[in-house]
Length: 497
Image 1 (cartoon, helix red, strand yellow):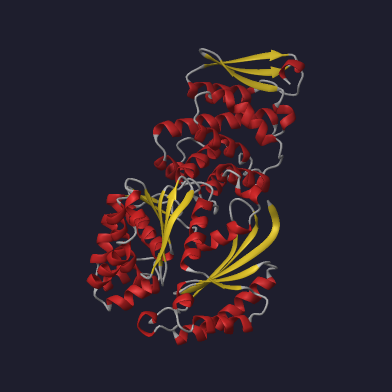
Image 2 (cartoon, helix red, strand yellow; image 1 turned 30 degrees about the vertical axis):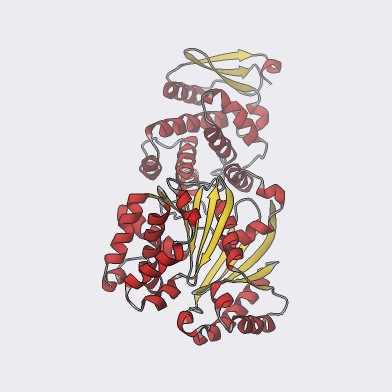
């Protein structure tokens, strides 16, 4: 990871323009600045064929500000990516030339529909590398669709049915909007090949739908990325949104007025996509075109990294005290999880890396702070299950009461088996840190062994580790959750090393 480098991208869209600045070049993008302005460049484009005059006038000072912000934050490179409005408008190239004169030295690319689709797909796969089904990126001017198969991209299409375009087409008549979407989707056979797979949604209007559903259902984690609905839940949500009068939509908390205007069209497009594709689930993504641009900047070695393990390592290196301890913990805890799956091993390795992130927190709040840091961390490497599992492990690693109220969201998101596995790993890590003070040298003088009915802790004789009261108590607790009897044995230092 190139930690100190900063780089920025401006997404010049049909509805809004946004500057995002990233810190470092790592497997999980870290956003340190994000600013948006709603310009509606594509408003009226369907009728006039030209960019909105007011939007163009507002865009120039906004883009100049973004260039100054990026320069002040030492973001290099900085690039402007323009999408549907500029590529489709008769005066799109002329406006791009005006921007280039205003901001010499800052590249501005007007993406083709195919390029925009591929940027969106790469951004999605950066955050959900195993994606399988169809990506839909719904913007102001267009809808990008990409077939996904086990993390690889396939057929793609860019359709002129973004929120602003549909508003122009419909003229207030949602039946006309539905007809336009159906006609646009009909020729694309690859959509029907997604039957029984997943539909991945990118775009601000669709993220607003997710936030509405999270709020209405009392879902315990307010993170849109990886939020998942069944086909039936998604259909019900779109039905509610399209049936609500504008007055009711305006009363929805937490959604901006401009986003409210796009919600009915987002719901119409989603409902038609579900019908055509037959997808079984909807998965929302916070990643899209901008993260696709970021992905292109990454060295190949970073791209090849496992996103879950990379996220754990990055947290450990940022907050932990000893970079050699996490690999030692992975080995030390392995005997307790002989039956784990590959996915479970990845989670165990990730949390071993992140197991010291509370070291510098106030001791009275350490369990809760470590838990919240993991559950709400801003990265994209963990889905909601992983966030909940790892957060619960960390709470218990810092000796939280298993029934502490602050752990309720994680327990709600986990089934009984996962919660018990998290408890076993959290208690084991607590024991490891008690024995070793978080150092690999002392940890190497201890080991755990599971026998038929016993959990055996082996300690090196004279190695600076011994079975004091706290060690015995934590060993007994770990043995209890595993249904075993605790035992301790002392061996020669050479044998245990």
